[in-house]
Length: 518
Image (cartoon, rainbow, N blue to C red; front, side, top):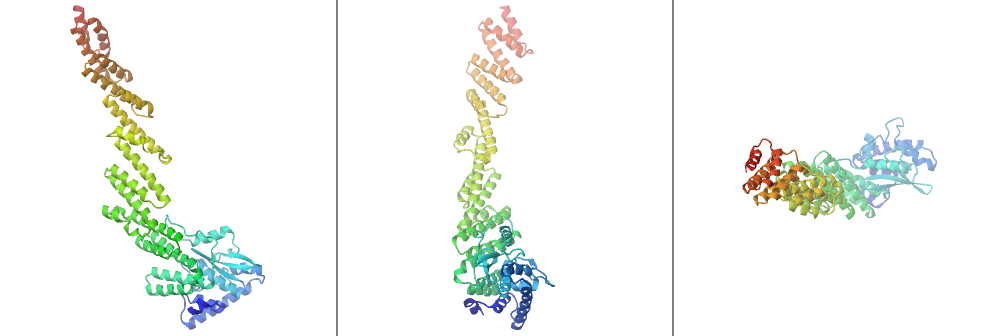
């Protein structure tokens, strides 16, 4: 039978037998009985449709979904119901089995119908008055289907599951194939599902039949059907969090890919599945296991880089949790360099920039000037990090301001405060800076400079009692020096100023009395 299918077109009886034997009866007598039963049912349906060519194809599709006094042949969609045997015994169908049924019914009705395969979908096309009409066989209104009906039919055929997932369905027109290719796809789908259930010998037999039936010119589109089913099974396994099973199926889809373009897409699916496995298992991994996680994927160039980027990103998070900001930032830079796909490259570049912002802000706590230099060299701002970078800039400026204030470098401090926005406690920093400078000048013997600086500190923060007390102490020290040098006239204004600052201190009244007595 396989030799006949591979080399000769089928008549109606053979079409029914060839389709029903797949996944169904193998006993000749029982198979003959099933063929006769389905043929009789189809004969009744065909007899009910109008004879006009223009209306016949549409009415036939609608009739397959109609009860006709019993259960409709096409009753409910089931992605796993891929054989005609599924349809006639359960009423369940998918795009492959519905297309198989429609084409057999079309042959009986004298309609010129042909199968069309897409990477994850099957449908029919019929010739009406010289025009090819698309038939979406999974819906009763699929004859000459408008674009929205075709899209809905295709979407139903695509695998469902957690994102991210790469679609394989760029060619929406599909490829017109012959009957043998449609049977080959049915065998291939059954073979893959048998493998998925651990039935290795059966799977090998079914896939061998697929290989025999597939016309050489149509190998690519049949292989893409394999890829799509394997991707669907991988997606289902991923949804159930069976990560190793999902990854194995995705690898098989990659191995089945017929060309470089489909391999690139299946490798992205491998990356997506491996990434979800990594995110789920990383909390239980030690550092060595995390570092080695992506190594088994080196053979998949399109997957390895993205998964390695995730490994580096997670390691960066670990380092940050242990306070290793520099190490975390370095790992994020590595991740940006490792990423393969544009989406992951964009995200890791964003993370690397964020890591650098945090590292420089952290550095400013110990070396504000070094942090400031690095901040100026970091490149143009990233609009997506505008708020984070603005906050980091304020931290760096504040730490620079604190450093200048602590060093008494007041002109540098004023420059920072003048150019920065929103430095907290700017007046406190400025007054403290001038106070420190005043004390430094006093230690060097510059009494006038010390008094001027301390007065400036008091003016900036008149409510600061410490600055007033320090100014009073400096005045007291200078009065003592002047009085000892018999310069009471110069000391007199200082006595008035000191008394206003610290009325409770008797020193200033005593100094004035001493000068009057002289």
